[in-house]
Length: 491
Picture 1 (cartoon, rainbow, N blue to C red):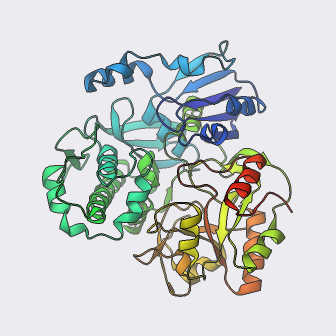
Picture 2: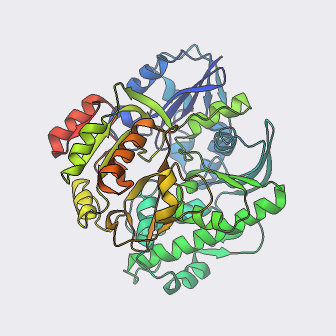
């Protein structure tokens, strides 16, 4: 049985192929169309997916009719009376394939739980909005996912964070991570009381927040006299993290589980994830590398299947064959240059994890400026280190969780030595690597360590702001030609 899971129509469309219980391919439409966060299915993506098996069934990531009822309630008349979800599949030569649907939050929950390896877990899903649900708690046991609690539209922690992203002047549903980075520059105490009083109240029972107004259309008119957006960001981040900690506590008490799965777009907030993990309530926490709506393509397929799969890693997309270009990368890094790598299968998820990465020397005092200038993005933006797993504890105060996918922050013990990877608050979003996870990247870091005594590199996504990651070898060649940064695809 070959199942295609599809998430499309909102933002960041994606497709996943599951064959007899194995995840064989998954990618984002944007990587093929070149349109950042492309909401539509791209023919080139569908064509590549078909190379891994024509589907016996398609599973859509939400319940369309239920979603229309919420759109009517919200006054989104154009959406409610617009084309059906099947319109998104028209012209893709899939007309003869039966289509199933799974609710949006169940897709999130399934994508997290069935890739976790946990036989019993609390599953916390937090996003802006599904059909009606905005925050849900599930109990995962064996092959079953049981809904325990839910919050519904318009009460939404995710919509609150998105509205504050917009209030700070960033693009909602896309640049929340920029606001998270900006928050470290602000003082959360200056505006948190006003924000709690006027926007979102923190309460003592599920779901631990109550929005004072419908934030779906954002909140640009809130406190226009406040122009220091870093304080707005800091207050929003503090409120968000506080509620996430309360949700985590409730999940532990309600389910009795010792393992936690976090899913939904809000699971990409690595600062809040770190605060949840630091509470020490959980033996293990699992966050799929693609927990947002694009990951619902995989989640929908796994929800339909209803059983665990063996997670082999996030490298599930387009393949650029050949040996990892260790020697060429080392030569550029030794010379103090920025260098890109586009090799192997592309990462499924928003973060580059070594196969579509831009790399640099973290000891270089100017590396942040160089990278931010090259990527044409704000100078306050931080960068992440990728480090040998066995060395991470010597350089960072690591939380006792899996750091393979940049989902937590850790305090750097010697920020002056590594200015390229330390944010203004002294933390870094650490990615650890061992040989079984990524042999080529591990070899690169090992040789770099032998050469310099430094076990880490700066690792950021191989793209320019507003553009998707480099996907194909042709993309890599075009990137080098346009921006002058060498990108290597193979040794």
